[in-house]
Image (cartoon, rainbow, N blue to C red; front, side):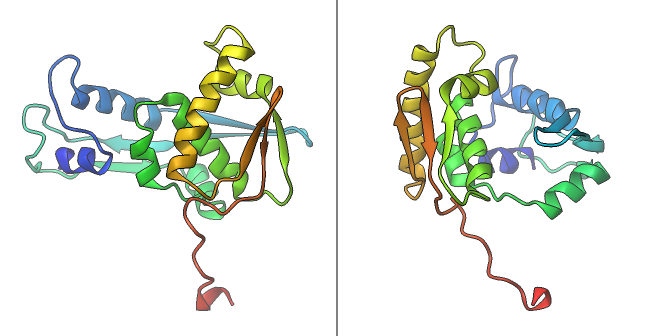
Length: 190
């Protein structure tokens, strides 16, 4: 049911104009209609991925706990599905719940989860580059740095293995244990 799904995300189902139900539905529709553009800096290559090929959401706003007659379905696009199967990055739901009221915190967690997945040596990330990617609404880098520092403390609390340091003008990300340890290799892959 919708209410079960929302509780899994750490949300309390509420209706009405400003409730969590219409907001979640709108955000989910935006995500499912999103197109991702990936550009590789070291090569002249660009790829586009539609997230979903189709979706059918059957949620009753008035009764979020009630099961529906038809099941809601989401059909991922073939390109997106192939990409996430070939390059999976597990996300820790406990950390997502801890950061749910912080868009910048969520962005930073996802970004560092991805970076840690392949990091072999320290990465020096200029704060200006982070601001361009995640903080366009902040007027200056100094204010943005304060917000990043605050969010990184929250992330570190939820992900103690994350090894980073704030330096003047940049954030240094060191190789770290992922927030979800990788699965051991299966017998089939050996």
